[in-house]
Length: 331
Ligand SMILES: NC(=O)C1=CN([C@@H]2O[C@H](COP(=O)(O)OP(=O)(O)OC[C@H]3O[C@@H](n4cnc5c(N)ncnc54)[C@H](OP(=O)(O)O)[C@@H]3O)[C@@H](O)[C@H]2O)C=CC1
Ligand SMILES: CC(C)(CO)C(=O)C(=O)O
Image 1 (cartoon, helix red, strand yellow):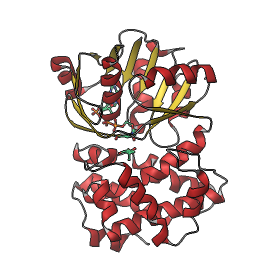
Image 2 (tube, protein in one colour):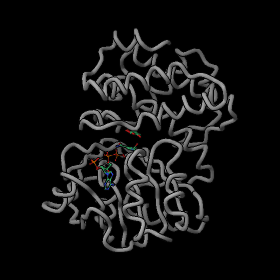
Image 3 (cartoon, protein in one colour):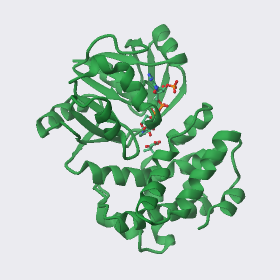
Image 4 (cartoon, protein in one colour):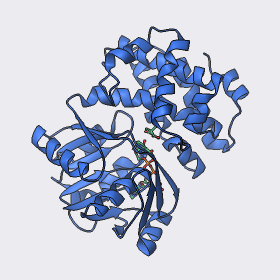
C-alpha cells in the first residue's frame, strides 16, 4: 500500500521504517537535516524492533496522494504540516499519532473531508541524529476512531499497522487519550533535569513530584467529569484510585510505567526536543491539564509549576538539579 508519513522523527521514523520493512511503499514528508540524511542514506532504524535501513522516498511535502497518511509531528507543528500537504490528503484516511488531547481536532479543522483515526504510541523512540531512530521501548500502539471514521476503517488500518508493530484497538479514544496524557506526565521532569524517565522514577524526591502531578491530574479529571480509558491493561478504575491514595501508594504507578519502559534509558520525547534546541510540547501535556482546570474554575498548581520549569529550561538550556526542582514545585 502507498503510505505517506508526515514528520519522520522518532515516531514517524519508526512507523515509516517498519511499514517499509513490511513491504509497503512509503513516502515521508521531512525537513532540514532529517530530509537530507534520509535522501542520502535512507532511514536507519534500530533498537527494540530490530535493525532496518529503509529506502523510503523523502520530500519536503508528499509528492503522491497516499492511500493512508500518518501524521507524526509534535503537536505544535501539526496544523502547518497538514496545511502544507493538504492537496495530497483530501479524503485520504489519516492516522494522527500524537500525544495530548487536541490532535484530532486540529487535523479535522485542516482536513474536514478526511476520515481520521487517533493513535497513541506507547512505544518509546529516540531521534538521536539525522537519519537514525532507535526504539528504546517496544510497546504497542492504541488506535481508535476519530471524526469521519468508522469501525471498518479502524479495523482495516489496525490490521495494516499490525503488520509492522503491535496494535490494540479502543472504542474509547477520548478516555484512552486522557490515560495517555497521565502517562505522559513522565515527560516533563526529564526535560527539566536532563535525566531519563527511569532515573527520574528511581529518585525519591522526583518520583514524589511526578506522583503529585499525576494525582492532581486525576483529581482535576474527576471534577470535570473525565473518565480514564483502559490502556495497556491499566483500567480507568485503577487510575481513579491515584486521586485518593496517599502519594506513597500512588508512586506505584510511575514505578510500573518505568518498568514497562525496560532497561534502556528513555529520555522521553520532551527532553529530546530540549536536546535538539527546540521548543517542547509541554503546553499540550501538563499544560493541557492546567488549561482544563482553568476552564472549569479549578487550579492545578503542581502541573503549572512543572510547565513553567520546562519553559525555563527551553530558554536557558540549563538543566536543574533535584534540589532546585524540589524547591520550586509545590508538593
Ligand atoms: N518519541 C517518543 O518516544 C514518543 C512520541 N510520541 C508523540 O508522537 C508525536 C511525535 O513525536 P516525536 O516523533 O518524538 O517527535 P520528533 O520531534 O522526533 O519528530 C517530529 C518530526 O516532524 C518534523 N516536522 C515538523 N514539522 C514538519 C513539517 N511541516 N514538514 C515535515 N516534517 C515536519 C520534525 O522536524 P524537525 O526535527 O525539523 O523539527 C521532526 O523530524 C508527538 O506528539 C509525541 O508526543 C508518542 C509516544 C512516544
Ligand atoms: C510513552 C512515552 C513516555 C515514551 O517515551 C511517550 O509518549 C513520550 O516520550 O512522549
